[in-house]
Image 1 (spheres, rainbow, N blue to C red):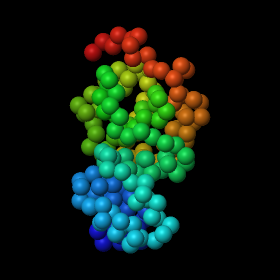
Image 2 (image 1 turned 30 degrees about the vertical axis):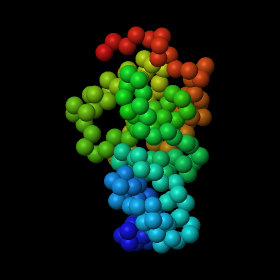
Image 3 (image 1 turned 120 degrees about the vertical axis):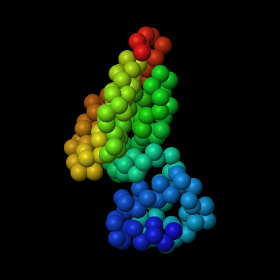
Length: 170
């Protein structure tokens, strides 16, 4: 618990947030300890504790959600889509955002590209970014996501996806 409180000063608020959400996901903190952590950090960062959730699949996902929140983009997390499976984020009703970790390659990559193709058949748009882009080139990733949202690609024309009208060959 004290380690989390020290992280803000040493590693910054983003590292704190990722570690805090990881602790929540692993059920390492009781509600009382969560409150203690909140009280033990500077007031300007307490909103991070309130914003934190226990469903982030990784620290990378925590980082993405936090950064998108700061630019006014809300995301649904760990969304199960029929025919596709669980995706990291959905923005609006048809924009999938995937955050692939450092070890995401080979067979995993192929499986994900198949999922992206299936999602496309169902009316979704998928943006997929890897660890290096998210961590080292966030400005580019953010610009791409914001541009996609500004073009309205996160909303389907009728507010509905074409899930029933498309036969997906898998």
